[in-house]
Length: 453
Image (cartoon, rainbow, N blue to C red; front, side, top):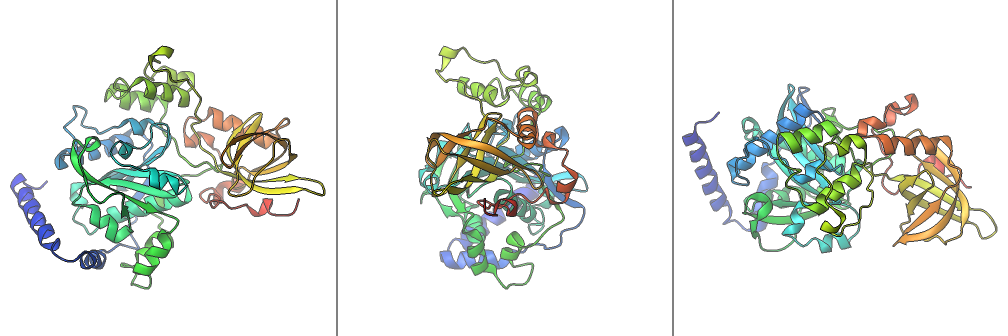
């Protein structure tokens, strides 16, 4: 580890470089940042990136994050030596670890907008981002081990690539948002094309111990075209367009999926108890609303034994409603026979023994319509049931009743209800094992559902 005096000298040097750099025009600064950036299209096999899911992996990630945040002044030292936030308890948060020879050397978390909202929404207005449609994920809790911070992005770029691929292929995310220190925002603007949410920084960002922060967003739907304009045709180590959108890195270990789910819960009762009751007092610090929401997500007896006690109903007036641990995105086709027949490509967002909720991008359904619902549950599993439209459930959403679910439908519902973590939804059928890491493209209808009814 570097001597404290050497670290101070490096910080002073880097601060001087940033101040000199700031005198350049904005376009010149951004061009220089892009010119200096270099990725490794062939990282060493000893480097692996995956979802942190074991106690040791999560502990190492939270410890690395704690030390990085304390050193930067973004938090006060915690007796546990860990930085664990309420968002890490949610099934809509995914923490990634970068392992080099089995040792955690980098981490970041992707927090999808959910029951707790997003960490940065307490300080930044996200209404304009939400108005564009599509789900939002906040990229947070980024840390790289000190031994690897001056190695030309050998850990940072693979972390960013995992983030990009996971959010676009697995996490059902259109918009990324970040809250970063003003000293770092131009890196995200120049390299990844993030755009600021507002011109000025928030001077006292509570989630980072009162440090200043700048909010920014990236629309992933337009990112490939923007990357190609900036980087297309450069040599492999400089072509970030190819790196993020085309290159397949064997170092990235994405989760196997039996069904087309869009999140990867890892928190078992034992892990929640370890991190939120024993190592920290995270559950004890939660407000009544957060406690109720946790019980609405983790509604099994084994979880109730470790979750914070439910407050009395009159404490906050919040009515308990169940929230599924596993989010789904099942492409389907709903057809109504007859001369005026209906044929609609839909997405299942909720599923139960007695029905489902579907979304349509542009067209609509009519209450009372009765037809055939063909659903692609996973890469090698599908269901065909009779369904009827029973209610409008919101803008572009309808509730369908299913009286006689088939065996595949029943098995899927049972797995989603009982599974605590994403691995509990396995084992994968043999035919699906080779394609399990390739979820259905957003908004697509699989070939099995594309033939005329």
